[in-house]
Image 1 (cartoon, rainbow, N blue to C red):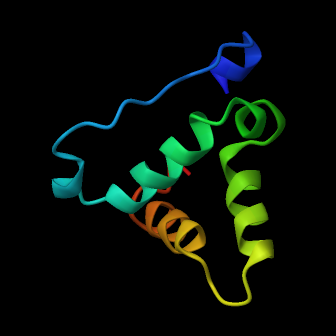
Image 2: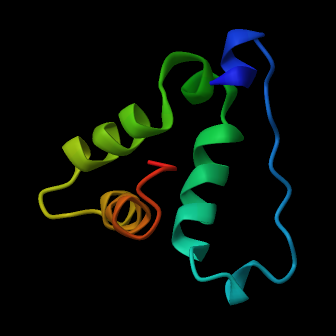
Length: 77
């Protein structure tokens, strides 16, 4: 939200040990959102996830990983 407020465009570089991270799915989805300036400028991360879910018939990975973060780290969500 801070970056959006100041109209900054982030670029997340993929850390070579990201696969060891317990939230690697969220990391991958966050990279997909942040590294697409058009998506980042127009949607919050939650809106990005909701849009991805809208495109799929069953629960998509973005929704699954967002629920995991909400469950494990509610103050972040």
